[in-house]
Length: 149
Image 1 (cartoon, rainbow, N blue to C red):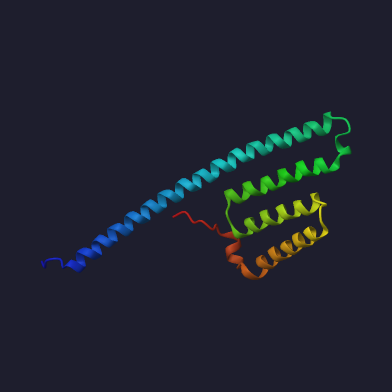
Image 2: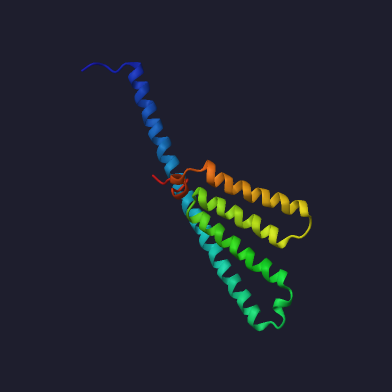
């Protein structure tokens, strides 16, 4: 048997360090993935409660639909929240683009501040559709962005 050279020892040391770094990275990814799921679960519970309260108000409060903008604000906020939960659970480019599209669309529907703001939002939505169509490959639309090894 030959004696290991300093280069062999350095290489073995580097491999061990890379293996340790890989394990630590894997542990952190697992922790972050678990925390994302916990946040998604808590958010989903809150959204279900909010939806229940909206339905309760709808049927028990007389004249609740007289202020349709308040109703739309509450319901569309719940919809954006549900899309956010879906994005947290399944982080794909398609889901991220859908969350952004729904959030911007909600802004266009609810805000009547400035016509130029609406034009900018519509341009953003068109940009998101263009990104989905031309910049994201079809195979990437379904695969999760943060892979768990």
